[in-house]
Amino acid sequence: EVQLVESGGGLVQPGGSLRLSCAASGFTFSIYWISWVRQAPGRGLEWVANIKEDGSEKYYVDSVKGRFTISRDNAKNSVYLQMSSLRADDTAVYYCAREDDFNTFDYWGQGTLVTVSS
Amino acid sequence: DVVMTQSPLSLPVTLGQPASISCRSSQSLVHSDGNTYLNWFQQRPGHSPRRLIYRVSTRDSGVPDRFSGSGSGTDYTLKISRVEAEDVGVYYCMQGTHWPRTFGRGTKVEIK
Image (cartoon, rainbow over all chains, first blue to last red; front, side):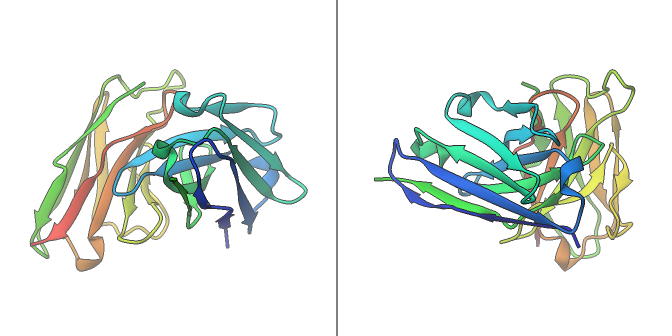
C-alpha cells in the first residue's frame, strides 16, 4: 500500500524556519518525482515545489523561491522541505504528493499544519 | 501562470440527481507531446485530496463510474450522473500541462 506521511509542522514566528519531512513506503521511492502542495485554511490548493527522482532537478512556485528548499534522501525514502523567512501567508496544511507519468499527483499524504504567527 | 476557472463555486444537489462542474483554462492544455493533462480531485471534509480523473477522462482505480470527465482545449467538465451522500466535498480541477501546476479554486458540492 502506498503511503506518504508528513511531519514537522507546528507554530513558528514570522521570519522563522521549519523543516518538513515526508516519509514514503509501499512503492519504489527512487523512481518518482515528489511534490509539496499546500492549502491555506479554508482555501484552495497550491503547488509549492517538486524534486526529480535523483534530486538533480528542483522547481518552486515563485512565492517561495529563495526561501524554501526541497531535498530528498532515497536511502531513507524521504523528502524534505526546508522553509525559512516564513510569513503569515505561508500558513497552510502542507501535503506531499507522488507524481506519476501523467504530470499529476496520484497519491497524497495526510498533511501537516504549519502556522506562522507571533 | 495558467489560470483555472471553475464554476459554479457552490453546487447544492438533490440526492440521486446529476451534477456538473465546469473548468476553463486560460491557455490550451494540449501538451506538445499530444496529451492533455487535465485532472480532477475530490476533497472530502477533513481529508486529503484524492484524484478521480486524469488526462481529461480516465478514471482512477476504485472511482465509481458515475464520475466522468470530458472536454478539450480550454473547456472541461466533471459530471456526476447521480449524486450520492459520499460525494459531498470540494472538487478541484488541476492542469499538468504547463509550469507551474495550477488548480482551480474548487467547487463545493453539498446536498440540498
